[in-house]
Length: 236
Image: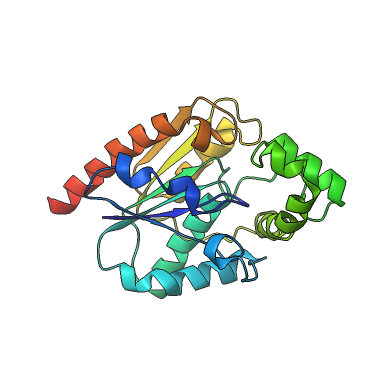
């Protein structure tokens, strides 16, 4: 089975570097390096979700001959969800399971105000509050000058997203949340249940919005169990 992984705003594939060593050997981890970061630094980042999803859909189409699943954290959860819907509409294929992490369900009302268009100092303070960008980056003007265009582009993707109703997905959904995450409520995580005809699981882990880093061991232990069961069902 292939597990396609999508990062949070400003994130890259380094988040997933150790995952293949901690997940079942039968699972191939395929982390998406989005434009504007890593070895794609010179490419302009996307500022709208739909073109990003269409580009990803075309890129991974040749890799879908094996059973596959999606994992995404925060912005990555939105990408994973909309990519699953795109592949169902355009290619007639679906992931075996969707793992969404640290993101309210798409149809849930947005409680927070957009931040992508804030003045620079206010934008930096919001990033500091979210605790996803290292303090040494936020406090380094030259680094922030390099990082700001990517971060603003990613937050534009998230802040301008508009949910369009479709039929629920056939695949099951597992939603992960942080017990100390003040950005994503338990109620908004529970709302992912409405978006699947399959089984739904909600798991809460210790940590704030970036429990995907601070609580990675527990997260991977849970993913290990669920992916092993998915692989076994693929062979049954």
